[in-house]
Image (cartoon, rainbow, N blue to C red; front, side, top):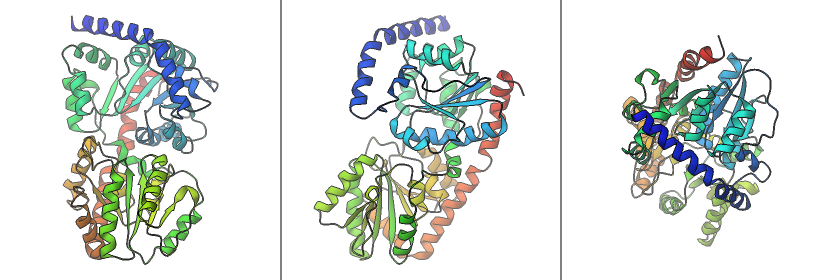
Length: 442
């Protein structure tokens, strides 16, 4: 009975998305005009390919945005190395992810924008690419994609599987649960990023036999090369800033720049030579931040202009994509944003820890709370979770005591190394047993 209700709900969903297709097409065109879709390749979102399909078996990796895409890359590299007979197709949704990831993928990976979850786009995409397996990242439960893949006998996997509290509540509503159960029944492998997430998927009626654990794939991102730019600026920065007190605020969302500016002003009262690096989540936000700081009569340099660091410069705004890890390697202290305003969900703190930074983050970190707890359980000094009001005190203490700073840096690095060990190996074993060996042979 529950399965029949699920089938009925999916039939309704498919009919609705079919009927709304013209409006979604217009919305896509509107996004293109606003610069939110790729100006030339936006038609890929309608399932129209821009590259030829190679012969032989093909596996499709799909991620929405930059964070999920970066987590997929180590798995893709492992796949290419160990299964050279299998072609790899990767899709992402956002243009910002495309701009960074296109420079990081191996040259033999086919990269496309993901199709909208509307019937004709999904049908056209699957008919052209004919993947043997679809590997989805994190929270990608799209009914048309999943059901059409299952109908075509394409094996499905969900890696780093997670759901926010709101998503879990929505998917578990009594009226929706039959559809949720139906969708999850189509997967051959679900790899949750934490035990709590695994419990969520079991409560949503995923079979316990397909749920396996290997660790959080975001710990494996450290091994990825960053985007190519002129690194002479970074080398010059290392020399120029060698004698200055320095900290970095990364992945800053709108509104958080005010918090960081107040911290900078307070730190400047303590240390006249303070140097603050601000990396906004979205590069276009960087120029807005720079203008606001200049109105405050602060000396600001902008990365996208390759502005020179003058002796009076005390704030550097990095308004470029794909360079965050380079700047983590430059600074001893990293404050990870997207976490200081209510409603925020945090960002990956393991990248800063991998670079050997003392790591601080705000109180609103969503599903990254499991990562913070894991690191703190290994060493309480590895991550500090503080409010915006206490951020000045926390950063000031680190800047003022070299031994304390080194203790936090070492703790973060050691926690990262312990938690990242063996993740890709463990995941590859699971993919082999549940996906590759079954669908493409050993």
